[in-house]
Image (tube, rainbow, N blue to C red; front, top):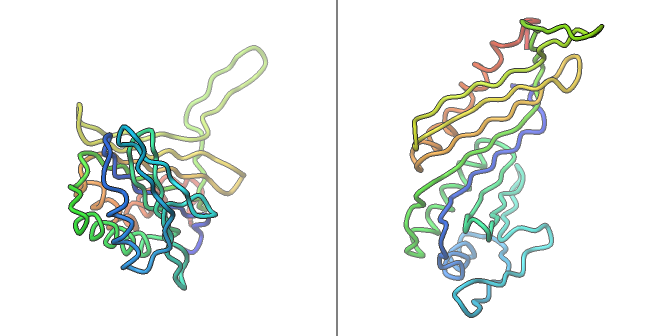
Length: 199
């Protein structure tokens, strides 16, 4: 996997309603995180003083940083990490903090992964318009259940040798965590789209 660059993994726990952020952050402090400050304002909403990098909480390790973020519009908590192993560690600590704060599992979770790899999609279709020939240069793969779990993989060329790969999944906790745990297999499957061989 040495040709993979710029890997970012973001996991969202979408609640769509207020949760006890103060209690959640207290648990993260006990797990070694630096945290921002949360103030409850009238109506049950929050005023948040984020850390300098915009995180709600952050933990630095030798491999990189685990960041906890918050989307006030969706009432969602996110975990960002630069690799699979740190993501798994961060999510285990995230889940533990939720449990200890007596915050239930979220009804919906989302997983977003982006990276570049040595991958080139060869055009299979084109169209001619006036004196131009427009060729297919990327691809999008979709899977989903009506009102349920879904997943996509988008491959977009960014140079003659590399492509940007974006992966997204949505569903219950076990579904998205399962994809994350087996993400190396998906990386290998995506490489099968490389029409130039190697990878």
